[in-house]
Length: 230
Figure 1 (tube, rainbow, N blue to C red):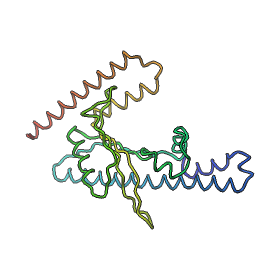
Figure 2 (cartoon, rainbow, N blue to C red):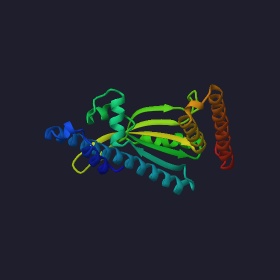
Figure 3 (cartoon, rainbow, N blue to C red):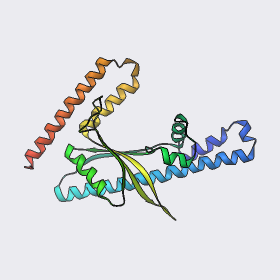
């Protein structure tokens, strides 16, 4: 559903008690439109980060004849999802509350070829003086108990609008192709068939994650030997 479809459907399906009250209807319409504007801000922040990532990937290709980034995916929470998460957390449903309490409205997943590439990309993101690092979490050196591995960052990104400059946080997950393979299948298995996940299966999934991590290290080692890199 597009933002405008959401806007129109929300107004069309307001409870009769609100629909009959012009003041309440205008208040709800204003709130929905504000959430659409918020979504545009975060979408713009995603584009800022993606543009920078594509620039550094192209630079690597030119200088070293290879691309450290295999793929870039992004996702943006819909107004419905933002409102639902605020309600679930028993937080006020307004723009200020969303900006203060939700750091995952905008998300980017960067898939790299090798483990060293993850840290190189993270360092370059940290080196930008106009990016403000809010949080970093290294689940590669310190995997989750499930076996999950990835490098997480939340970065406050400047967005230049037509008449102002503002910041919006973007959650960035950086992982190798192998880490992404495991995480995608583990997510599908656990959340599509959650009732069937026994402790034994969880342990087997962790074992798979460890074996994949070993393979990741071996693949990087082979790359370094081929290119004679210490």
